[in-house]
Length: 298
Length: 309
Image (cartoon, rainbow over all chains, first blue to last red; front, side, top):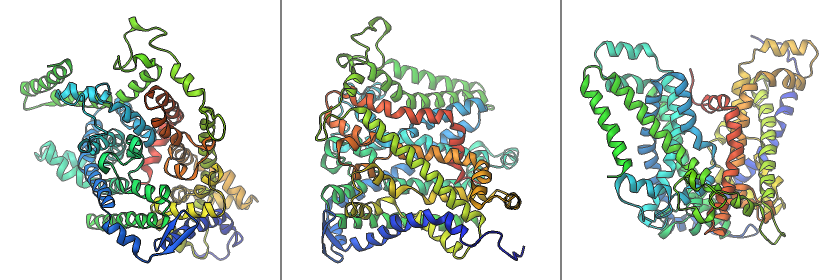
């Protein structure tokens, strides 16, 4: 359709976009450029700074605390993808087969932890992990006859398992909602045809159902990896007695490290450098997603 | 062997029994297994909430004595009372004078409602413009906006903090809200919703002499109402539960929000965790109420960005 004459004055769209353009240039564009600049400085609080070139990145390369943070966070990301997503998928499949009223109820219940902020979940679970009396210690003892006196949050070996366990409680239901929505849009006649041709339940799932929902699976995997690298509030509240570090830095994440160097020690430059490392990881993962989606499409 | 293990073993045995009875057609076994797994998962999810509910009403002296609620026979003023809440609300001394818990509830409410309202207004305004107007640089703007969604917020926090210190809007609720008044994510959602509105409707509005803003406000906004409800919920939850930025920006005791102050209470009330659990339980209430009132919109809004068709 050829538009002969605009039916509105040409400044109208800019008036609508005005607040966004203004706010985004002040609070996104300017800080974004400033984040680039800050990376090359060592700062002591927001007011004094010294040019150090690539010194911040050099420091990160040699800082064992940062390495520990990166290792912990990567471990958490792997656990998220390998434990959380299969569980979410399993529950979604079970849920997808029943009648719709019960489906709604279970979906609501399993999703409910996500209403609660991570910090509140962390506070609640820090008490649930109490030795001898904590709900989790008692339950684990009941299940496997071990762990009643275990100090989950002050034993370096058990800190990451405790964080992962809490994250399972929090996010299994969240990813399940996505998988459930995807399962409902899978073509039923395809599955039916495969079944008539003699495929068993596992074959139908692996060759028909999973490929039909590949976009959502890729999306959820990437989102959980990105989310994992931004893990901060959960360990912060769980391990609040050690400022989120955990014993021997066993619960330290990249963002906890950023929070520490930038806002507690006041080196915003080093903080920006850590921010860029996180951004780079997220950017790479997103690029992989775009690639994967294209591969999957062909 | 304890009762828990025996119950689980019995459930497993029943499943195998049902399976063995008709291996050709294990429909009943599946149905049984499915019900058991879903029920166990729900119990696991709900148990911490039930435990929390019990803990906030239990007296300090019996907090560890009973796993959940005390048996009804032991139910008395000595075991179940509102002690935790009264200690929570009696306030704590600080540099800014005695600060009461109400102050934090008020701060969090302010932050969440004002931010949500502003985000709804500005995001829908920009989203509509991107969906329904032609103008110079539209494609470039769209690309920049989508690109900006890939930048993690933590990267910007340090430079924004430096700016806040420079221009003196640090340590104020309003200063905290300022950087987040409009979100690229919100604009994107509203753009998608506005695309679905037929152009004829907007032109009809113009012919009837409605102003451009009038069309947006009176014609378009009512049409994208389901989207608005979902967006408001997600945005309210995000602001109510946010911790990182408020923890960095706010310093004075009387300006903190609930997540920040409750995180401090873990160490301040170390041996008296009934108190900060009572606060946590209260902080969980508003999102829960909102969610149960609007849960259909919520889940549809959550998945609308990801799942097509």
